Length: 212
Length: 212
DNA sequence: CAAAACAGACCAACCAGTCGGTCTCTAAAA
DNA sequence: TTTTAGAGACCGACTGGTTGGTCTGTTTTG
Image 1 (cartoon, each protein chain N blue to C red):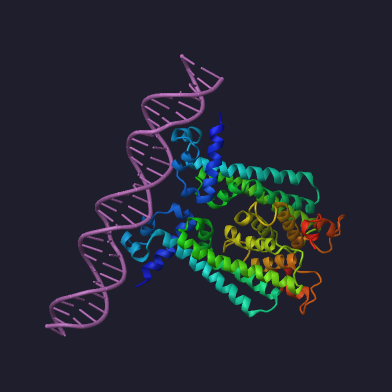
Image 2: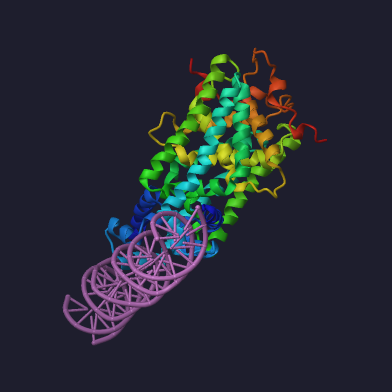
């Protein structure tokens, strides 16, 4: 039964998030999971493999979401909208994974690192591509350098792991709406001559337009 | 003489950036600095103190810059412009410090952590305050939630440490210009009725408006 | 010559990973 | 049905290597 494996994953995730990968020993994980060294090493080859599994589950999910969003829509505006929304929402689902991901990713063993890097780059390229597309169709401002804009967007979203909390002032959906709004305001060409008008695209009636 | 101290700081910074705090032993630092254990522990109480010093030099600098930018200008638009520019440019000066800062900050001993946290919060509050100010004067869109917008800006800039390189395609000044432009496009009210007009404020003729 | 700066052998603690062994459960053999 | 055989799950004492830090002594500096 893979029950213990799940327990170990869950408890170690909590511990890593609190104290960091190096701040937690295998013995602590084992104790918190009510098992033993033997139990641990029966399910994982090493402490490093555990770190890899955590990384992989999160990045795999994100990549899948982005691919889907990319295939469903045709307009770059819609595409970036859904990618950002999905991306932001992932922080609600996988907050602990992501925290560990960004804080300990450089301690991954080379073999593991390469696998993760490939998926992460794939995601980055998707964002870049959508921006490029939007600039070609004239929806997005052509004067913005694509790489810088892309990294600005990625950074802004990625940083969420540092401050988001489920008990915070704003829900993840509200945050997603604001982010989409900020990004679209930043990149949309003012004379977007496409089928959809600026305003109708920019805000799907985000929550904060209704507030007083 | 405090010469060795500087050498240790510099070499350990390089090592930490490459391999991370936990990936570098005191013996390695000592060897790379052409000194001995005795030399190291003469200048630093512990490996942790070394980590603290690195954190502190960077955050102290950033905070000083932001304070200055805040005092020099009166208009929130000008303020946010200089804060962002200064903030972005810090990544050119202190890239290694910042990398270590964000990757290892949760391994700081509590006593150290508190000191750093205070300065970091001070900086965050300054950014928040400028946004608030801009919303009050009507320069910035009032419908944007201040906290989310602030964190979006901080995240977008902070993330630079993950990808910026001096040998990269764009200079730090170019990046700073694009960031200022993106942020102002996102936050400026379209009917900014202030002394300065939208366009003249937004871009101080950034490099990319001249391209082709 | 006194104090600071540095050298380097040494140590105690810790920690990831191992290894021989047990327990349980299933399924084939008797 | 009972017995036997075997596989996978799990246990926990042990180890070998590493690491941060100390301590005694030596050199340099003012």
